[in-house]
Every structure is written in C-alpha cells, then in structure tokens.
Amino acid sequence: MIAATGLDPLIRCSVITTDPGLIFAFVERWHRETSSFHLPVGEVTMTLDDVSSLLHISITSALHSFEPLVTSDAVALLTELLEVTPDEATSETRQAGGPHVLLSWLWDMYQSRCRARQWVVAARTYLLHLVGCTLFANKSATYVHVVHLQAFRDLGQAGAFSWGAAALVHLYDQLNEASQALTQHMCWIYEHFPSVHRCVVDDGYAEASPRACRWLTGKAQMTGIKGAPYRARIDALTVTDVCWMSYAKHRGVRGYDLISSYTRQVRWGQIIVYIRPERVVQQMGYIQTVPPPPVHDSLTGTDIDDRWVHFSDHVVPTGELCVVPGQVAPDYMEWFFQISHPCVTPTEDTVDCTACIRIGRIAEHLERVINLRMVTEGTDLYDIMDLCLRIARDDDPDDSLRPRQRPRID
Image (cartoon, rainbow, N blue to C red; front, side, top):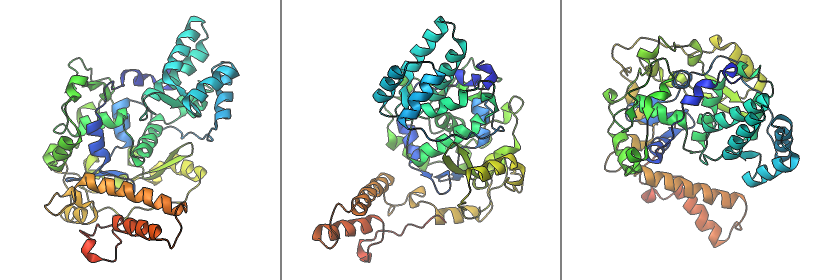
C-alpha cells in the first residue's frame, strides 16, 4: 500500500542532523519576488528537477485540492481516517495547539495499528508521519498538519498526486517565511555547493537510489560552524565553485522531465507559490540571459490546475546550450548586480547582511504597531516611530541618514 502511493523512496531520504548555520546563510539570500537565492554567481534555486532527482517522487501528476482545516475539522478527520476516539483526537490537537498532531504520537499509533492488523489505518498513519518528516517538515520537527491526511483518504488515488510539486510548494512557502530544517533544502545545497559545506558522501550509496541518500550528516560534522563562516564562504563563491549539472551521472536513473521547465504559479491546496525557472536556466545547461521582470498573476485554483495540466504551453524558452557550466550572457552579471541585494558584492561601504536583516525585522514590527493603531497619530511617540520606520525602509527625507540606496527587484 505504501509503494502504490509512490512515496516509498522518502523512507530512505531523511537527513537526520540538520545544519542551521548553513541553512540560515542561504535563507538570508532568498528573495520571494524571484523565488531564488541571490549569490555572487547569479541566481540559483530549487527546481522540480531537483525534487525529482533528490527524492525520486512524481512531479508530473495532478495538483491536490483541499480546503484549510480548523481544529474541529482536524478532530473529525482523525476520528474518521485514523479511527481514534473524538476525545483522543481532541487531546492530541489541543496538545499541538491547533490542527496538528505530534509525529511521535503518529509513530506510536502506527505500531499499535500494525499489531492489530488494521493495515489501511496503519498505512495512512505511516504516510502522514512520513511526509511530516520529509516533504512537509518544518522548524518544529515535532508536528505535522492534519490537512495532509486528506490525500490518504483513498490510498488507491494517493499516487495520482504530484508529490514533487507539493514538496516544492511547501519548501518555497517555508523559505518565504524564513523557516529552516527542510530536508530537500539541505540536500540541494550539498549537491550544488560542495565548497560551502563539509558533509560527506555515503560510500555505500547506490546510484539507483534517490540522490538525497548520498549524504551522511552527523553532529560532529556540524559542531562549531555558525552562520558567519558560511556567509563568508558564500560571499567568496565563483562560477567554478558551483556544481551546475549535479545530476548528469544520474540521468540514466532519473531523466530530465520537460515539466521541470514549467513557469509561473503552482499550488498545494490553498498555498500558492511562483516557480521561475527562466531565472536559472544555467541549472538546466543553458546560457543564462537577463530574465523578464517577475509577473504576478491573479489566477484561481482551477486556472492554475488547468495550466499545470497543459504545462507544455507554459515552459520557458531555454536558448543556447552552455559551452562551459554556468555560462551567462555578457550583460547578465552587470544587470544582476544592479538589481540584486548590495550585499551580494561585498565592499567596504556595504552594510552587513545581518544588520540589513535585523533592520528589516525591526521595520516590520514598527509597521505592525502603527497599522494596529497601538499608538495615537500626531503624538510625539507616533512621530518618532514613523521616522524610525522610514529610516529603516530607506525612505528618510534627510539624505545624510541614508547610507546607500538599495535597488528594487523589478
């Protein structure tokens, strides 16, 4: 039953020990407007091809439609599909603080259902635990949202969903929220940036296995490396330090699928993100040119699903093949440094990345206080907070306080 869903490769793909310093160093360079990391070598990102190669799950099937759950809905779903009592379901969701359940509780439930030979319920329980540890892992590393259980209502149909698209949607959404502890994110870094990390390859890795199984991590490897050394390594990256075509030797096992070139919106339930492969065609082996400005669509879920079904009408033009990996058009890097974050090119007058992030967070909290009318407009306190907000947003009328104008990405 597990194998029929197409999710069984995930059983071998869990990176047990994460590296927060490495993750944060990349998260700081994520831009939600472009759905990409901005590095000294240009833009890079996780693609559908990365998900397919790393995890060996489907990227070509249907997108899943489901409605958001409130806690009472989650209790009803757990009662129906996992055959627990309403009191037990209520207790678990209350402990999780909403429509979530503990991964440890699911594992205990799975074992008890196996002992009772309740195989369908055991399979649903195991699958929810599995995707909670891999595809939908979050910062807590403790809970999983009950909404994903809906996909396992009919185990015979669960394999008809594009779990690869779901993984990418969740990953982008979590990056947009500056989260961490995501298995796919870690393995993607290991594959493409060997000079940045110090993870090691498993000597017993078989090429037929998902690429995520190549990597061994342990506490000893992660000890002592905080965010700053990783930032320095990323700032020093050159084109030759990046492994642009990581899966060349793996193509015999997992070929490149045209849907990996699909552009614009993709969704999992109500979560909608943009995938923009036109900004990273060098990862597909083509010369990177200046991409068009990011387009923001206003499509319904049905429209997104229709585009996805007819994905061949919405793939990016790839252009010329690279002679050398990571090759870009002559005007690309000049354009990139003009529109990207100033910290991508470290100079003496560049504000430290960490300071930029902290200023941005302060600005968000100030704006929230003002928008919630927690201070009265016209008072001295309001004027001071408004001035601080404008300084943080680089919108202060006093040019002497403006260290450097930051270009917008548009």
